Image 1 (cartoon, rainbow, N blue to C red):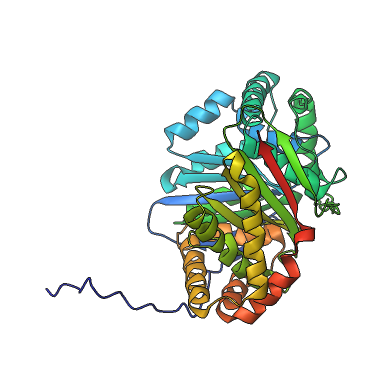
Image 2: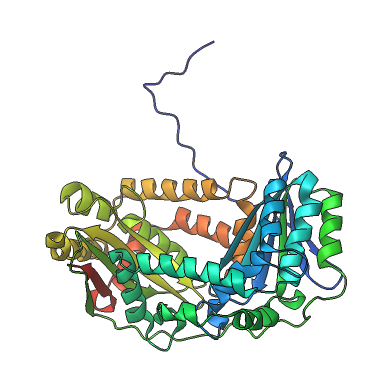
Length: 428
């Protein structure tokens, strides 16, 4: 057998086309949409339930998150102990989460045990009771964790940055406080549950080794007459941020060993024509280990162990954020170097070899992110919940392939304007 020559680098082959497997579209009796991705040879399936209604729909802080979290703490048929014991016995794993506009319930189950595990999931979604005893335990544990996290400088800085960017009239501008946990009750959660967790507000994704029996089980538990309601909830309210542009904020923590630095500004939302190519510019600035910020501030100046830039999308808007931690004496020179790198990108085109490296990194990362059987449904769920077209990822790949250095410089001139940024430092 001839061994490869390890002294010669392998040939780099460009990624010419990116295509996601397309799910099979079904409508269950009763009207709930089900999207099926038949992928993989392992005897396991992933079942996702999406409920329209999240943090921007809630009456009180934490209402959406706790409603979702408490689904596993008791139903009319199963106690919290029975739910945990049976899921463990059948080797299933359950994930519950809440975003600004949706609640998510994800079940991973062995194929042979799916009839048993989906029965539990169905009861959680259709028959939740929010018992006060279990709520006290969950609420107290989360409250204690909140108090611990609230003392961290990175959390302090993030809260202040959100307040400064979004303003008092925006849900993201209202940070959670400890007293918010005490305002939660079973009645408060049940109110949100009855308004948003019903058949008319639901969509389903099924992926993995899908069998006819599994489809029959889903139809049995989620088909038929609409449960809880058949009309969609009120659409997501839209809020207008009121950013404190061009301002700096300091949050004192007297015993901090180092300071957290967070900077942010608003950029176009994901549906804007500039968004996809702006992602390339942000990657050049601070989106990978060899970025401009890492090369200058970590490798050359030694101000920090790590610094990064990224885009955080919200409905109708998007935040470009920069985050790092550094010793207190390095904070001001570090911020000055961040602006210096932005100015360089606005004045000088990115060299072609650097641009090609970033393009290859981004395309490779895109392929890696959605190569697994259970990562593909995440892509489709993301497009649905963000209201994006079904060819969004192909558009992303095409934008990365086509963008040139002149376009990146123009984008930097447009969006890297110092007066649009908010700076926050939390520390000593």
